[in-house]
Amino acid sequence: MMMSMSMSMSQIVGFGVKHGSSWRGSCYVSSSLSIPPAVVDDTVNGQLSLRQEIRLGLPSKGRMSADTLDLLKNCQLSVKQVNPRQYVAEIPELSNFEVWFQRPKDIVRKLVSGDLDLGIVGLDTFSEHGQGNEDLIIVHEALDYGDCRLSLAIPRYGIFESINSIKELAKMPQWTENKPLRVATGFTYLGPKFMEENGLKYVTFSTADGALEAAPAMGIADAILDLVSSGTTLRENNLKEIEGGVVLESQAVLVASRKSLVQRKGALETTHEILERLEAHLRAIGQFQVTANMRGNSAEELAERVLSQPSLCGLQGPTISPVFRKGDDGKAVVDYYAIVVCVPKKALYKSMRQLRAIGGSGVLVSPLTYIFDEETPRWRQLLSKLGM
Image 1 (spheres, rainbow, N blue to C red):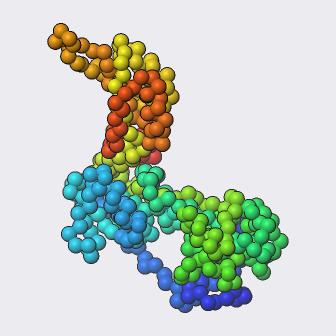
Image 2 (cartoon, helix red, strand yellow):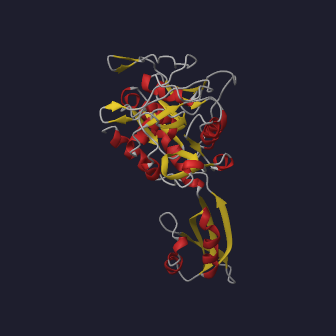
């Protein structure tokens, strides 16, 4: 076995990139490599176990865990945990429902095994550990936190100084069967798949404890494939991302076992409720409700005035209501109307200026908590995925 690569890493595993019907490259395995325990299958003859409770897996630690709990709380689905050391909790609003705190990769594995029915993880974790399993299904693909990207990064110096794209990297003559491109990563499923799809024939992958950004400078890897948020850590370690080198854009997603949704009693209905709450809250996050008084002769006249402004069209259009005041004769008269419209947060100031320009005054701005639609599009998409 070829052992030209430094063995200073505590764990080293190499994977060759598939070329044709065989795998090229070398494979390195050290005795300290920890093998994940086998997952116990919770199904019998293709059917789910008799477990009655519906189970949701949530990340047990870190920023992803805190942001997930905050999101559920904002959707009126607060997780109640009697003891912070316990791994099981409940959401009182959902009957016959359990929350299990697990490592993100274990959430995916236990969805496959049938030990969990639903889970919230990063798309990167779901894709890496789900490995295209047909029983896994994405229920909501954009929970609006945990944003990052899985990206290939190479040194800014040496033979890589003029390399700025994945195509240029693939054409470098340095990479041969005897001297493959060495990539340090924890993504040993997505990494080889990505490299093969981009024409890199000779690649080995290694995993290591600690920061991967140090691997090229230490001489134990030529490049790294890792999660990137701002890119500051890469720049500070003299590394750069390259064009076409992003494997996937990731954020938190709600995922499920297809088998659970179809076969476990109450799972689909509970998923529908969770999905509606998530959709209503996430849709409201990006909107403000704007109310203004405007003088006019009729609601129709003011509707035409408001709709002439692109930023004031709202979700379906403005709501226009008469404002009654007491006239000189003591009777109720209408010469003002209240205009209510939802506007995107990023367009708030522009919308306020447009309201003023067409005669609006007394402009009030209120944050929104929920916007419930007639039916969430993602629910219809889910039913379609399930063949319903």
